[in-house]
Image (tube, rainbow over all chains, first blue to last red; front, side):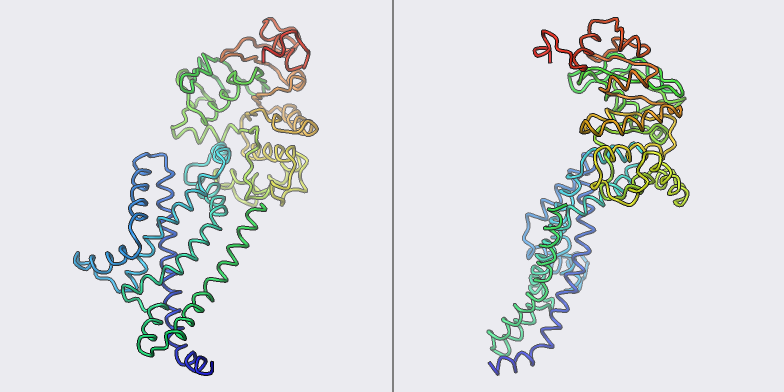
Length: 217
Length: 251
């Protein structure tokens, strides 16, 4: 046990650095997936059939390809097309695009849950499409979407470990590297797992509270 | 002010309005009564462009109503609507509901709109509810807020789509009394209602609609007290809960 603590102290700086990268890539891909997901959802719920079709097609394609393959594609194939990205950039963009599909479903469900009477009331005071969306539909849809959005965030945090496959030095890759050089598998991966729990458990509790609050309202 | 000429509207193969023509003049209170499914609400929804129509013409002032034209915004900011199910915005306070249109659509100064909003809430008897959310109100209170929201647009006319039909019986009175006051102040009102007593008392004119056509129209003492048509008499008997031999089979 004493050696565990000694090793822990020794490995902590590298692991914390890895956790920092995990947080950064999660935040970056969260922002991208949120904006892109909202974009897909707005296209999907639009009255123009072609736009809705385009959105559905894209979302299905994204959902049908494993995240890992998407990451490989962005990191290894795009350079052949003249687009050079750092591992971090490729990871954030790949995760962001992959998760935009799940985010769009969350937003779409929120938008479609809004009573048509809300839209009619907004129309009846003279609001145009843009105002109806920004003042009436989206504020209510976000509230409905918040718990499942939080769940996606937790999944995203954990799936950020997949970017280790394209050499992003986040928590799981740092763990693997330290374990490989020190042979202290048990210590290192235990610490790695604890690192993820420290980040995800608070999120899990927050989402659970949101869900409870939402059910009451 | 509002003129409808030969209005036709079908939902699929179901023709709901079969050639409606009517005029609403400034300051008039016009009540539309008739069995459910007769197309009463559809007329109001067509006037406000919530529904398209197939043939005929609706004008508000000089403006032709067409759901997909730019003018529809003008029409909606000048003709307000009160819905059967209130349709208040649940994520905004009572006061915010009232000033939403003036501030965001008409771009009025927020302070001014707020002052008038509070004034309107006082007028409908809800001055003390300005900062509560709709979920905390009773149905009657919600509908009064909806009326204040309609008034906040300073409309030329207000369309009431069965404003008391979703209310518990004991809450109907407070909404009708607000509407009665509006009528007294000279507001132009087009009211779809099942409240025959209210129509009798407040309406300048009553229209009885059945099967998508206007069966009878005139002052309330004629249409509601001495109806000429058998269909009007039948309907009135039914809604006044006077039992008739075939009242069960006819519904």
